[in-house]
Length: 375
Image (tube, rainbow, N blue to C red; front, side):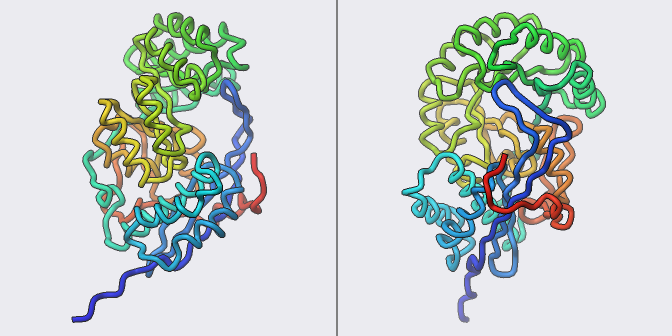
């Protein structure tokens, strides 16, 4: 009997979409009025896989030219091999930043295609270990008024029954700490004593400030302090970590395996964050999670909640997904098959092949942009 021909990667294409926020948003170190989603389609034999990253339109020509050429015409089921092909192709471009975001989007699209080819969810192809995983609601931007913050907290903690919420602090690069503390107090009063409260400074504070803030928020039972100082300051993270009983977290700007290894080796975090749309896709996610596991650390998924879900349920040392307000809104609007985060736990649809999501192209078309620099 002649062997069945192996499905090849026929075509890889990318397109960018700019989705405005409902109102201007800000954290401690950045403000924005739109989010750019770069969507990748990977045609492998009879199926099309989709993946995406939240990055810049600069990803589009990089994917359509460099990365597509690296994988097209090669076996589509061997996704880690295709990841290696892309890694070699971008050697002289640098790995961190936009390049890694582009690679991540192609990798997740190829995993989606491979899972659809064999008729299983991505989580099963990766090796599922959890039926579902915990999540936390993430928003509470520093640009919000007191009323807007309260309404958002009520929606997620009470109306949607999510027992973990995170708000932004560190406004104006840490220059308004009194307002930061007032917002933390408001959050605790609004959600009550039974909801876990997290804060994220987005690297706004100096080491001394972060230590003082860690001491100040103790009375509000905050249990998670994300990026109290810049994630590039590993010694500073370790210093803050040694001074508080809160979990210190960072890692969302990890673009390669060595980054995660340095952060773990420095004793900088209690929980390692990984962003599947930045780190190198599902392929690199699994390796980064293993680095954390070797140090007896949990990992947490940074943003892109519906795309992160399959990697999360295939990771033994997994804690929770960040159900980020912007990405929740975008994914619910532009994809069919998104999961419902109500109740604080979520699992993949095991009846659907791939990641179970279908891009709604007609709904997305008004947001399509040309491949130029985005916001």
